[in-house]
Every structure is written in structure tokens, then in C-alpha cells.
Picture 1 (cartoon, one colour):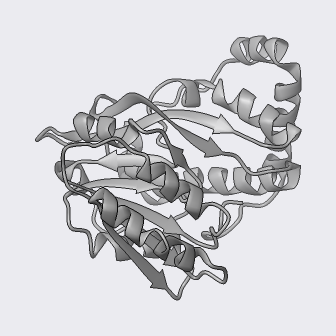
Picture 2 (tube, rainbow, N blue to C red; picture 1 turned 30 degrees about the vertical axis):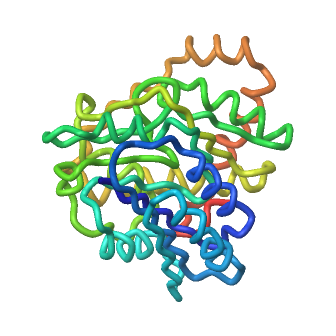
Length: 273
């Protein structure tokens, strides 16, 4: 049995497609509950989510929408965790599109007594030319191309969820959870999901600042879980080869990275885009 938790802050333009992709999921032979945890929304996110109630009822999946007054992703995750029905959890960003086999494959990977963490095969997407170039280069970096990054989609079984209590007030919830598991406890399934990057150079810089700040925050506040980190940054030779293979992607990615280095660290959580 699995509960799917979707925190959503002003995601009216995305939540419908996200829920539609879940409705297209193949049967995973166990009870499923979906919780949309709308938080601090000034748009129609909660109303759009509620409009899917009948379709999920027809599918035989439980469906709940929380309409929380305060915009906070950790708060939204904790509120949903407080009302879940099932011990296995899938945490899903509201702008993600899952493929039909993803939920079933994650359930199969997690259906073990020992603690496990799992995610799908990420397809990084962008619409504009700048974002497409950034996404193309970023997806080829070792951190994204190997291992189990868990960006936008991560799932844990009952034993795995016991590794932490409430989500703390942090920026990088996905990074925080992943580091509660050793590399051998993380499992990648072949089913894909689409994870969009921000659109345009300014928004890419904003999101990259937040990502870097999230990693730094975890490193400083939770040093006890950092031994589970396995990032091997690409060497100069590897980066040079990637740059030769994709010079325009490297130009965009490198520009974003260089600008972020000279800007101050942002504070607190905000909407990714």
C-alpha cells in the first residue's frame, strides 16, 4: 500500500497535467492514496486538484486535497504525512509527469522489509532554447546521469520512512531524504518521469542558487548524514570533453554556474520557478 504526496504552491499551470499522468498509471496491485498538499496558494491549485476527485474514485485510488493557508513545502509535506493511510510513501513534485509504469515499478522496488529508497529515470526537460540547452548539459553530468538523484520524485518504504521524523524547515527536502540512505540502499527503476527546469536565464539562476543553498544548508546542519553522499565531481578533463561535445549547452550551464557563485546565498524556501 502506497501514499503519494504532492506538495503544491501556486501550481495551477502544472497540477492538472501531473494528476492526469498519475491517472494513466498502470495497476500496481495494492491500495493507493494520493494527497495534494496545496499550501499558501493564491491561484486555483486546490480547486483544480479537487476537480480530479471523481476520476481517482473511478480508478479505485483514494484522493485527498489539503488546502493549507501557509506557503511552506516542508509544512505541506508534514501535513500530508500526518494524514497518510499507507506506510510506503512516494513524494512527487507538482510539475512532474510520470510515465504509466513508474508507480508500479517503485512499489516493486520498495516492497522489501529492509529500508529502501527509490526513484525513476529522470528526463530533464525545458521549453525555451536556453532552458533546453541547460537541461541537456545538466542531464549528462555524473550526478544526474548515474546514481539515484531523486529530483522531483523519491519514494521510501515503511522502514525507510522511519529514518527521519518530520521534515525540518529546509530548502532541499529531496537531498535531505536521499542522504538518510546509503548508496546501496538507493534503487533506480527504468520507468521515466519528466522533470522540467525553470524557463529562461534569470529563473535558471534563481533555481540554481536555491539548489546550491539547499546543499550547503544540509551540509552545515546535518553533518551526520553527509557520509552517505557519493558525489564525484567531474574532473577538468571530463568537463572539457563534455564542453567539446556540447559547446552551447556548456556555455549556458557554465554561465548560470558562474553567476550563482558571485551572488549571495538565498535564505529559506520559495517556489522553485
